[in-house]
Image (cartoon, rainbow, N blue to C red):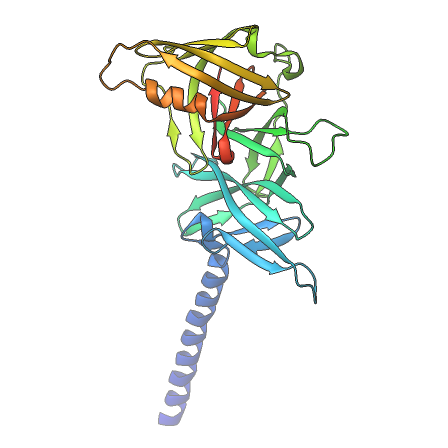
Length: 306
């Protein structure tokens, strides 16, 4: 009798232990695709799972090949609640170099779940494009829609040509499939970048976005303006003085020179920041949203005007 009780007790211990081991296994499996930081999460690029470590992943390009496929966190991130769970999720850009000279840019999302970050499937934006800004749509009918602005080449242009055609893509994440879908825009009334010119209007500075995710916005909206004249000069206003100088624009490159301003002193003015942005600008493009975007030297960021 005592032996039977012992066997039953032993069997119960084995069953309970197995139960907890199974639960632990299931739990670990469920957590396998989560990470404490979105720069260490797993994303799916062209059907292949890529797990970042501190924002980088390296893998052999092919068996026996000396070249590597390098995936990197690029930035241009925005935070928003993609799945209405009152948690801030992240959308940002990745680059992938495959050893053949191309630098492919992808948009990805990371959902901030209770157990950690879950990465999405990547959406290809293009090869050797020039990313500008990533924004959250302000259209009330487009909830959780992200707008990515970048420059690309015109059809037929070689890859050696600097990107100069402004493009915007509107994306919404399907949280069930973790795939981005492109939102069809209402094209009525949209701007045509091919018909826009620098001297078409007075431009109002909206913000500057650096590639380290630092953003600078004017403290006083509407005070900073930029007007291009056909004679190669420009006029500007700031939150303190008037300014002006010369500019040279060839293709999509631009440079500002002889920048000077009136001499009134204003406490906490952003005039110096604004004029430095002009001084550091090297290229420009227009977007279908009617914006002028100046690119900063060394691809360090961009400045947006409307």
